[in-house]
Image (cartoon, rainbow, N blue to C red; front, side, top):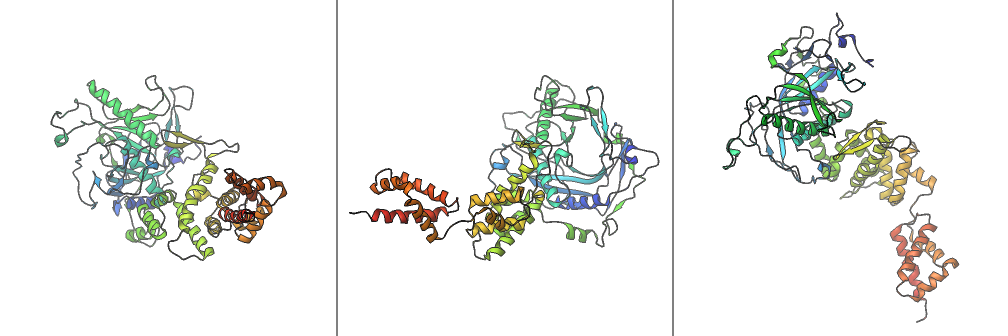
Length: 567
């Protein structure tokens, strides 16, 4: 239902637009993170076209006078093995895109060679043409009712301010497109200007796809003639509102196939806007993944751009930024640490591996939780030696155990059914209980740090600590790890005298006399009897005996048994 709708969003006469100051601040931070040149003065204009989800008949945008321009982002192509790829070595060789100085002009030319996405892939640089503020449109829904010939218009998001990032045509494959979207998603999530939830529409991708000859100029082998496309082909086709990496890859690959078939048949492609269907709509693609046309596009002149009369030029000063700071001071005060800087700091200052640091920065709240937990653990341990094992322990428990509990809490219902789905190596979710982030963890940094200190001190074992963490997360949200351990009788017995007494009570127990007699005789079954006794000692200690020290104590007791035998 259209419940979050302002009269202006439905083009009611007499209503006027207003500029969102929070969107202005977010766009400045985003542009800085993407290495853009920010313009202190930008202007708004109307882009005219007709479509049912655009009630005004025009869209307010900044296409000719954007807020920022001439940026770049470095990334790697996406692959289904990306999470398992070795990240220890960084290849700093860049291909394509702009040089380091983002204020220089570029001719847009690019010579590229397609390469496999397997193994270590080189970095690629995508040039950002502009970043602009514009008005979001509504959403046309064609599959929510029985008749496919009818549509519904959702205006709940219409009129909201959005940040549009427009790139140069530097990408050459579907996996490159997915790779750069994932990099931008993580970057904006890290600096706090977008939550990155593509499945909820917080970040969407409009993909422009066109085909070109495989070999051009000097890149063509001598035995292959330079190829050309038939006249009327090679136009870019826009696929709207893709909301997952899988959709980006599927839509790009489908468009390449469709446009190549048209070129072979000498059929012009034309400039058009299409939408992507996940579910099957034809027999040719029984698993879905097709694009269908929603409207033809003319040249940009057909949009009849004109200055927006109801919104004055945007001047980035103290008033528009909502502070007593100019643009440079605002960026310096509000720009957070970038992901690469955070990874380098975590690796250098805490000595954790880059793999662990990469996992932590993917969830910005995890950075503070990690640092708080390390600080708490060191304070309780009073540990200042080098090398310091505490950060590594905290990182491993955070990235493995705590993240797993958060993910399970977000994706499982009351019956233990998971909303998590996996398709072609990419995870997708149905209805979540909460976002998958440690921001929603019931275990904060102080309690996690206390638990790590208990493990490092030998107070609890790893298996005990796992049980304590689950109780802290699900059941007891207030008690400290020490209080939970005491209430459950969990404490490692490491005192050697206590362990020897425990072993003696088991070894000389009349119920185990037959095993003891067999052990005294020696032979090949002696190791089995020793294993049997280890189990009995561990059971007698309720699982609290320190495994290694208990084995030492048992060996000492058994050695006394065998040495007392007559020679």
